[in-house]
Length: 454
Image 1 (spheres, rainbow, N blue to C red):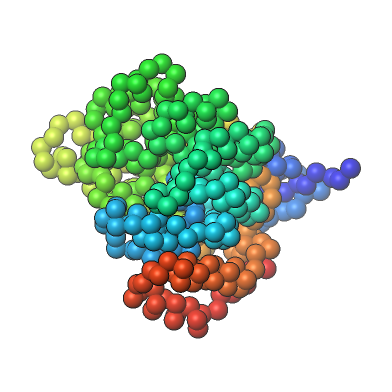
Image 2 (tube, rainbow, N blue to C red; image 1 turned 90 degrees about the horizontal axis):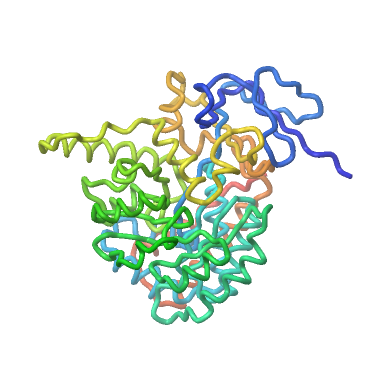
């Protein structure tokens, strides 16, 4: 029998995010196998691989609670878009309609690896392009081979050419194959407001995702029936929805995820501010990135956007003369949304989200010696307002190191780049899609050579 691996993060500023733990202190974190075994000062290092954490912050991995990973090859294709339906026309009708399982695999793999590089150890993959069971299998395989923890939400494709005849029937097969107690990658349902599909997912104990924008959808009385809504539900965006819906969400304990940059990009939100509405109703909203077509796999940018947008929205309310305006957001609340609350939304609060002995070892180590980071006068402020993906030194998922010394482990970036650009070129050629900026980007890419990871 092989010996269980032991890893010791030595002498870092440890941020546990555990409600029962004191403020960050300089400590050690011992990992045995796939779990956190102990946190303390001067822990014995016998038999353990020691990672020198001095001058670094050791903390839970970030959790991206809403991301369309299948859009990876369309990165920054539409950075200025502000029309939801123009976006859908390009990504679904024009390009998405031509996705092969291979394109699904490469896009999802690119998103997953970029997420790991940025300190994201868990992603809720909102796939509204599950065109066939083969496309779904390709996405799940990409997530599994990347080493990230993921909840892949299977949903009907948005384009008119696609069929959803395989749904929800395919969910049972996926649950058998992926939703086991020790699964790093699991499947759920991107079910919108289809209660017939919801019933199938509930019978399989799956999380259910719904994108919910108040201008475009309402909840009928059937959703208030007992047992329909609960912690198995994830509602994303939640912008401009009525007070009675917020109260129903609060009463049923649903999960809410918000995407500060994307919601601003499309003009979904206003000074009602969905994150604050959720908090004011006793809910614990999580953060998602949403789109690669405008942004990328970077939760640090999402946290900074949340901080700025909440303060702007609340101050606008105050200057407008509104009474009882909620308090300005804190950096600690922002980080909770990117860790603890994300774990809850994914249905994994008992396993991840905090550095707690007995939980899964999803850990990142962030350097603080960079010119834009030191000195560390406030740990939460440093993480939220100063650190970026270049400062992420080490990433561990379930005890396995996926990034070390600032470089992804066992990833050939040259090969991945070539495969992704070939996928993009196939989609552009097959669809006939034309964009002046895309042609310029392609020319620039021809002379750029990525640096291969160790």
